[in-house]
Image (cartoon, rainbow, N blue to C red; front, side):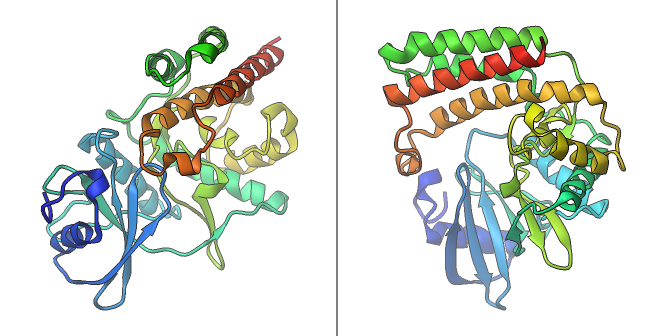
Amino acid sequence: MIGGVGGFDGLVPERILEAAEGAMQCSFSGVVLPLPSYINRVYELEREDGERLIFKFYRPGRWNRGALLEEHLFVLDCRAAEIPVVAPLRFPGGGTLRETGDGIFFAAYPKRWGRPLEITGDDQWRQLGSLLGRLHAVGETRSSRFRMRLEPLESTAAELNHLLDSGLIGPVPYREFEDAACELMDLLIDRYEPAEEIRLHGDCHGGNILYRPDEGLMLIDFDDMLRGPAAQDLWLLLPGYARDCRRELSLLLEGYRRFRDFPQQECRRMELLRAMRMIYFLDWCGRQSGDYNFQDRFPDWGSDRFWRGESAALRAQSAVIRSDFS
């Protein structure tokens, strides 16, 4: 325990500075700026020489040491292949991961600036595709032992069961939600075919891609890295259903195929993956709903009206899947 106060919610500036200085073996100024993060605790610190570093303190119980090191290794592999990423720094004495006295893992990163991604033309869609093709070419060079496997009967079934057993759904909307979710699960199990599994970014939406003038696109935040089909990192970038975004998808794949093959039939997997993401996100919110600032970010979450809306969304997604596979 650092500074006499333990626990994830006890990461006060004194504890953060003490952990950072002990790990980096240098002094920091008193600047400790919290940065937005839904899951972990992320802070910007300033060394006495003025250099700014980013420290990420990982939420306990989410990933074990092996899973965190696999994330770091993937990003380091990407950097070695000259893919623009923000790789973890190696601490004095070696390694990219340290642990506080009360068991909270943390890592340090260089600070990198960039503008949020704005897609303004065909060339940017191709560039995005090329970036992901390069990423997946690296992703398939190693296996992953500790990261989540994206597969309906493995990841999605566990998430749904946890959600239904959590007690977070009120008695009035419970049956409606259970029926809609189980209907969707039946479709997933019936339609989802085995796929090649590689290391993926896992959360590859526009918010995790920066544009750096004179350098181009940069991938950030590999915290949700997982094992699964390549389509997972593509559909999240589309502005709508895959069937309604054929032009954008064609441009993405044009860039992607410069570096790695992508069978056209894999596009049918995208709406199945969207359905799996919907259940994953609900379960993720349920696990975080007790956090001190969760209700500020999601004020309507957990109400009967909320669960009725989610039931309708799951049924709508079931209809999209049936249409795609008819």
